[in-house]
Length: 334
Image 1 (cartoon, rainbow, N blue to C red):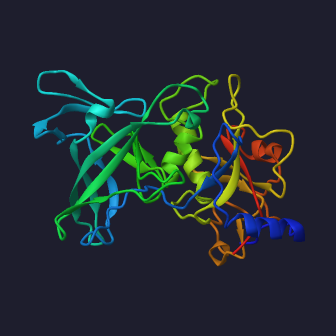
Image 2 (spheres, one colour; image 1 turned 30 degrees about the vertical axis):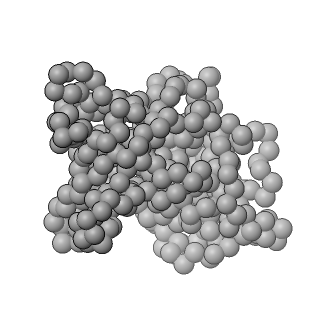
C-alpha cells in the first residue's frame, strides 16, 4: 500500500529525536500532547511458567480478603468494590490484601488461571483527571509465581516510578476489541494505553458531552495510541512515541484540546473510531516495512477510487462524520 508522506528535513530530525526522549506530561500541563505505548494490557502474566499466555481478564468471582470470600464484586467508576459476608462494602484502600484470579489462554488454546493479590491501594492523582469527575484508585497488584513460590510485581514502573494498575469494567481481546462483561474486568497497568487513555480523560463510565459514548471514546483512544490503523490489534508505533490526540466534544468539552496551531514539528496523521483509522495521511513511523500492505480493504491509497487519505479534520469528517478522535505526530524515522 502506498501512503502519502511529506518529508520536511527539519521536521524529520525533530521527530526522530523527540521519539526517544522520555517526557513527563499530563493533560492539565500540556493538553493533547501525550506519551503513548504499544502495550495494550500492561499486566504481566509471563512469570517463569506463563510464557505465551494471552490475558483474557480478571474474574469478578473468587475474590477473598483475609481468607473471607467477597461477593458482588464490580468495577464502579475506576474502583474495585465488593461486599463482605455480613453485607458491608469493601472499597478503596480497604481492598488492600484481597486476592483474585486472572484467566488467560496459552498457545495451545488451553485456559490458564493465575492468582494475584492487591498489595496496596492508593488514590489517583488529581493531575490525571482533566474532566474533574472525581477520585479513582491505583492498585499495586502482584502475581503468584509457583516456580519460585513468590509474589512478583504485575506491572512495570511508569513515568512516576509506580507499579500500579487501573481497573476497567470491560475486557480487551488480542484484536484490540472491547467487550462488556459481567464476569471479568481489566487491570490496565499505567504503562499501557488502556490506563493512559483513561488518564487522558476518556473514562469509560462518563456521560454528558453531547451524545458521546465514553466507552467508545476510550476504545478509540486505544486504537489511536497504538497506531492500530487496521483495527486488528496490530500496533504500528513504539513505546515512548509522542502524539497529539484531541476530540471535538461539545461543551463542557473538548477534553483534549488542539489549540490554534499544531505543536512545533507535528503534522496531521489520522482520524479515528473504534474500528481503527477512518483515514490516514501518513504512518507515524516512516520506513515501517509492515505498512507495505496495510489493510487495503480499509485504507485505500491515493490515486485509487475511494481513496481514504486525509490531511485535515474536515477530510476525516468527510469520510466519517462520527469520527471520535484525531491526532498529529512527528515524522518519526524507523
